[in-house]
Amino acid sequence: KQEVTQIPAALSVPEGENLVLNCSFTDSAIYNLQWFRQDPGKGLTSLLLIQSSQREQTSGRLNASLDKSSGRSTLYIAASQPGDSATYLCAVEGRANTGFQKLVFGTGTRLLVSP
Amino acid sequence: GEEVAQTPKHLVRGEGQKAKLYCAPIKGHSYVFWYQQVLKNEFKFLISFQNENVFDETGMPKERFSAKCLPNSPCSLEIQATKLEDSAVYFCASSQFGQGNQPQHFGDGTRLSIL
Image (cartoon, rainbow over all chains, first blue to last red; front, side, top):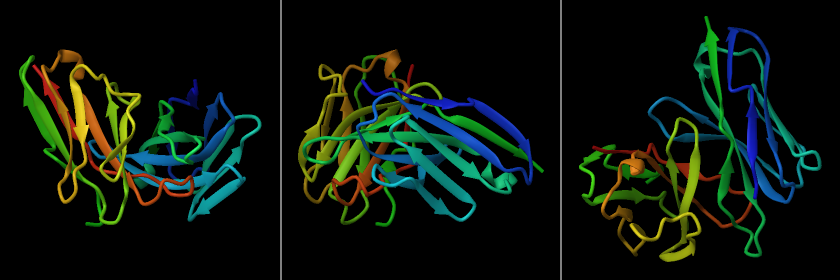
């Protein structure tokens, strides 16, 4: 059974710092890994999706890497801003014969960026 | 529409009553997913659909939970004889294709409170 863990559970940094969020998963037979952002009272916003054949994806100040063999992914946020404050979740999509599976989520990292 | 629309935003029911939640996926998306967020970040997969067909229902407590996606209607998740432990935020997501390179787009959720 796939298990996804995120470290740290919470992180507080001053504005401008670069930071790294970690995600690990137990079963390397994944189809993709996704990073989401959740603001209070809101749904999930997809940030980056890394297919199993890829090693990283970038979008603006965000960079996500994937090391499938070791079961790890990192989300790097450059020059953090107060607007980045949110909960960040990683989720893996498992393989299936039909190529489509449910997401298994980590428990999230709650990020607070102070002005 | 361009967003996954979930209604109502908040639903309050007495224990034992029925609860029905609705989800309109993004136009053109063929896949719909339901997730339950019980504690702050604990997401649990419930069920998925490919058009109006159930694809994966391994997460559904079948005794009281049921779901449908009918043509030209919002998808629905219904809980009969609700229990206190059903209190959670229920998220719906949709994706265009059932392949690993398509992110799931989430609605803002329905907060279900069982009193």
